[in-house]
Image: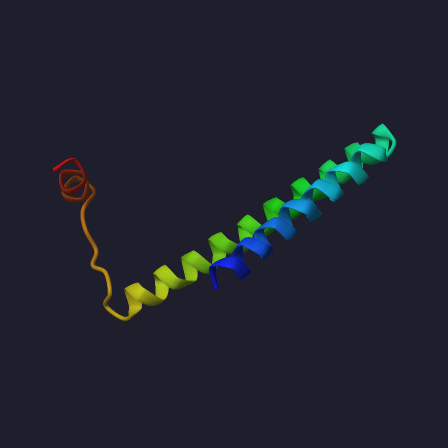
Length: 80
């Protein structure tokens, strides 16, 4: 399995390099548009991850997996 993982990693690196080379060949305006599109996609992806984490936290709380705590008590635990 280790070699298969290494092969996939190398393929991803090669693909990434090809994408960068292709982007370099685009006119500057298209490069800027590409950068904006990628930036928006990253934001949407992170937003989705945050929403999933919030849902998981809510479910954990509803199932009794965590307890309410006062801010002062939480800070004491963190700083201890």
